[in-house]
Length: 318
Image (cartoon, rainbow, N blue to C red; front, side):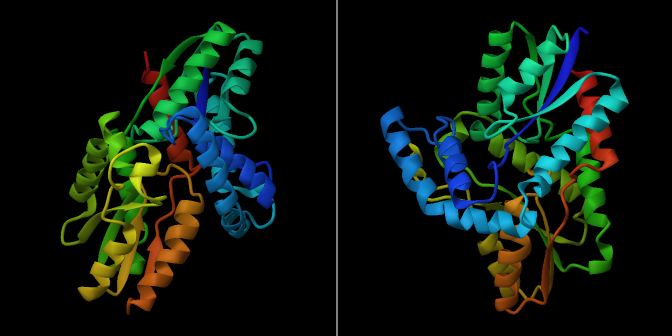
């Protein structure tokens, strides 16, 4: 076998206990691509933040997993996508997670054992962010070198026509909801990270493409969610990208919008950010502000159309 495919996503704790969540958050925040600080300070700060946030993270996971981490929608979708892509392409396909179990070195080891001489790696991050895509690339490059495998790495697919069409179709599938407006929400990042990749430009390009597809006569706002704190404690100067999804919801409520749909095109699969932060917390806020309803449009997850799109991206890579 000459090649193998590896799908890369973020990962999840071993289970939904506070201890497991603390360990996972320490690994995540200990990544220099996430906390851009000198090693000793990064380790101290990651331990502090992980301890502070573990309990709430565990509660959020309980909400979306129903007691078992095996039900985590992103984890189950990533595994399902790998199975589907292997069926479509005939190429051995593995799912890998940047943090936690079944990590990137594990997937490269499995590819090597299966007889591959090279790997095509595709992170399930449509836009190229330093804290996600660059981190995945660094780990994949290290694993490829360790196991003597060639590596082709796809950094983004933010403007892929099939991707834009599938996101637009997912919005249109909710037409019975009859929204007054829409929020297109991407994960926020520290301003300092914007110098490292084209993340902001790519998110804006995706937003404009979606506006062209579905925005005629529809008020659509670009928003940024999941901000963790001031950018300076991540080694940057200043704040994170805004306006926040909460600020957009407040503006829409003040303008008289009653029903709002939220698209999260930066997330290929549903997770706590979409199912808790948007579909519970932002929904609650919007209703408290006088809105009637707010709903998150489901991510592409492990739909056959999503698997086919990803398979085509992999097949077209050099």
